Image (cartoon, rainbow, N blue to C red; front, top):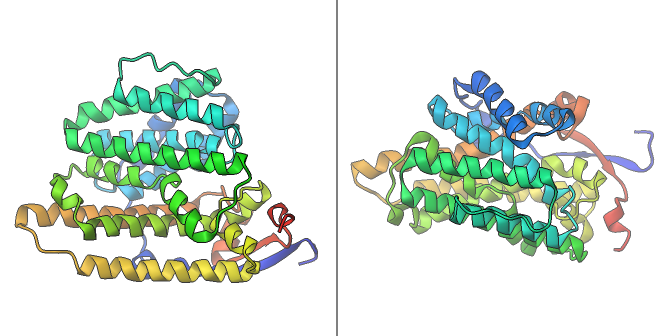
Length: 351
């Protein structure tokens, strides 16, 4: 390549193990996608630019892989959550709250407060009208979730997952505002929360109407399956999103962490490829070591584990489809696995 400030690296092969096969797609995808995008645009009252971005992202496709067997009503709620989480998460990731701990904390505390008391005022002390409306969008989702499921344990699992996600997002903002850079192991701890994967598992339960006792979901092997699924998603994500994020000076990407600690760009991609392969192998081993349960439990547990697999599939195959990360070069990047990155990104200037 002619630009001396950029270099070409080879991404690891991401389509291995159970990811090699094309995923199932929820049959309600096309119709529900339009309904969900219209709902968010109307409820959030966002401008044409934001509406176009939501449509281009097409997170309903992700949701269609996540919950391929959900009925249209439950699939619609999952899509609403997916379309909502993107603009919400972007505020903390690379948006207006990225360096603003006070506003970020106010937003998170208001969201969680409204989950505790859906009739409360949810007074956002610091924030814009658009941010307030975004929180109200989630409140609408949360009310419908509780009404549709009627399962207090599942509602509590979703609430707990959202609390953990918000904690991770806040820590990420704090690190960014204080220019606190972490090594890869410490960054993994925060990213497991801020990636927002845990709520997906509650949504899988909801979408497929799984009845699984708490003691089963608290089984150590099941917990390790969830954790390994989260790791696979975040490693995939940081490989795929790195090119976009380095241009935005996002420093909490695992590739960036590797490069800050002395690895070349290619070495960093290779290292994450090895971490990914290790997690995929561990996932298979964990599934094989699941303890036996009675017939009433075995079937929903198998569906739950498949839901964790689907969350990983959804992340990868949605990334293949969207132009969010590679723009017009998306098809070529996935064919060749070659991507151009900066030789000297700004986060290395202090190293």
